[in-house]
Length: 222
Image (cartoon, rainbow, N blue to C red; front, side, top):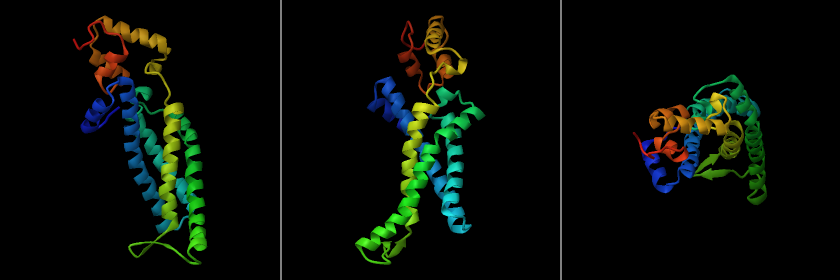
């Protein structure tokens, strides 16, 4: 998986343990992809709802589908590169979409509920016709609902992606069981194959992860 050099260096300092560092780096990478897709989601939703006059639920469905497709591609190539082998497969894409349905439900439920409940609460607490204002400008409750909906779906999507869709051993792409993959990888290292080559095969972002996870007689680069 890829991280900007400053974040990569920070992860090495904060999480010296390779296992925890890998999980932390994956979470950061997923968050970065999420920021990009949140912008896409928000932009597509605004285009369809505000400019084209498409109903709120339909607009939300379209923006979700576009953002989730981009999320699958980017996470397959970066965050979960080791698990996916950086290959896009229709079967995995379909599985990813199905797993994100829970995120879509959370997203849509959040935006619909808040778009109706915020004006109602304002009417009860402040008075009929009350609106939210920031710097003298009225804030559309739908926008607030959409922002919170993106956050809700992000949490659900990350959980499902990490624990369900991309939950594979590093050797799964070769069709080998995890124990057989470990034995094979260790054998390659002990036979003199460069750890850098093995690290690239496994999709590790750092060759040190390969050396710490798998047995290597010298414990260092040849």
